[in-house]
Each structure stands twice: as C-alpha cells, then as structure tokens.
Length: 204
Ligand SMILES: Nc1ncnc2c1ncn2[C@@H]1O[C@H](COP(=O)(O)OP(=O)(O)OP(=O)(O)O)[C@@H](O)[C@H]1O
Ligand SMILES: C[C@H](N)[C@H](N)CCCCCC(=O)O
Ligand SMILES: [Mg+2]
Image 1 (cartoon, helix red, strand yellow):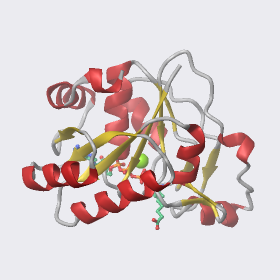
Image 2 (tube, rainbow, N blue to C red; image 1 turned 90 degrees about the horizontal axis):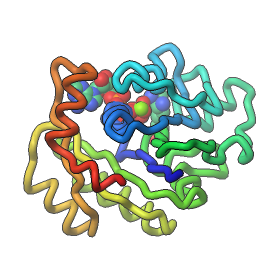
Image 3 (cartoon, rainbow, N blue to C red; image 1 turned 120 degrees about the horizontal axis):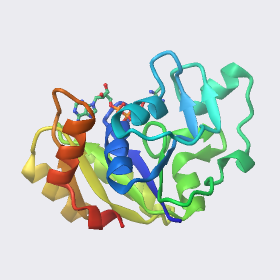
C-alpha cells in the first residue's frame, strides 16, 4: 500500500515519538531504513514499545551515533541503493529518516534525495521552540527543490501559535497538528495526544 515518510528539522526533536503515534493510529507498519547509534536505543524498539507493533527490520544498523554516511564508514559498511527500496507491506508504511532532510545516507546521497526517489509524501516534524521558523522553512525549501511532496508539518512541544502559523503560511504547508510534551510518555498518553491533536483523515 502507500508509504508516509517522517522526517524532521533536526535530530532528537521527536520524529520517533510522532512516528510511533502515527503508526499506532493508522495500524501501520514502521520502518527505519538506516539506524545509526545502537547503544542509545534503536528507534524501532521505541516504536515497538509506544505503538505496540513489530517494526520491519532496518536495512542498516550502524554502531556509531552520528550521521549514517560516517557511521557506515566507521563500521566498514557500504550502503547499497538496492537495500533502500521501500519494503512491501499490506499496510500503510511509516518510514523514518535519520536526523534532518539533508543528512547524508552516503557521501553521494542525501535523505531528501531518497525521499524524492520514493515519491511518497513527507511529514516534516518540527519543534515549536525559538529557531524553528528558520529550520522549518529551510527544510521545506530543500524538500520542494527536489520535488518531494509535503503532506504537512507536525509540531512537537509547547504551543507557539504565531510561529506555527507563520511557518505554515510562508512555507505553504498544512499544519497537521502538534504533540505537546508528554509526561509520562507511554502508549496511552501518546495515543490520546495524537487523537486529540491530529485528524487521522489527513494521513489516509
Ligand atoms: N511529545 C513528547 N513528549 C515527551 N517526550 C518526547 C516527546 N517527543 C520526543 N520526546 C523525547 O525527546 C527525545 C528525542 O525524541 P525522538 O527520539 O523522537 O527524536 P528523533 O527526532 O526521532 O531523533 P533521531 O534523529 O535520533 O531519530 C526522546 O527522549 C523522546 O522520548
Ligand atoms: C545519532 C542520531 N540519533 C541520529 N540517528 C543521526 C543524526 C544525524 C545528524 C547528522 C547531522 O545533521 O549532523
Ligand atoms: Mg528517531
């Protein structure tokens, strides 16, 4: 079936948490094609825990917590195009990149180039804190310049109505919703927050 790509304006901003919420809400499959940094916990394990699903196996699991292109070099691994095709799934497939849109998968391939190849719509996850307008608009430009379809932007953090509206307006993207900071963050609180703050029909 169809795929939805979850990318973001940076690393460590909440892509995995959002992807888990989306995966759970859609009853989707989840795939993290390239995981870098194994000791700090893998995104697929987080999604398994938060969404109660069994993620598809990553194509590459690289030890060092850094950009995938470098983590692969350190591990002596060559990342092949053939391993980076979307896996078949009878369900919607939620796919999470690594870091932001221009992070290199290899020295000659950026995540945004992969997204363009996959021709699947992208959700851009963005913080609401100061600095997000610039990071979000830069990310939108980078996706657009490659012809990547943008489903919309999902914010994470405390409400910043003007920043959120300004990004949506200047960037010409749909504001899909905002996940607040959750404490505790667990399967129930996440499912409730997603249902309260997003329209599932925006993703179907
Ligand atoms: N809505 C939220 N409420 C509470 N904590 C959150 C929320 N979103 C993210 N976090 C926490 O912030 C940290 C980073 O989030 P996350 O792992 O989702 O980032 P990421 O963008 O997927 O990072 P990476 O680039 O490594 O894949 C994690 O500790 C996560 O639990
Ligand atoms: C290790 C981290 N958690 C992610 N898996 C990879 C983030 C790559 C970011 C690269 C960069 O923009 O400098
Ligand atoms: Mg992640």
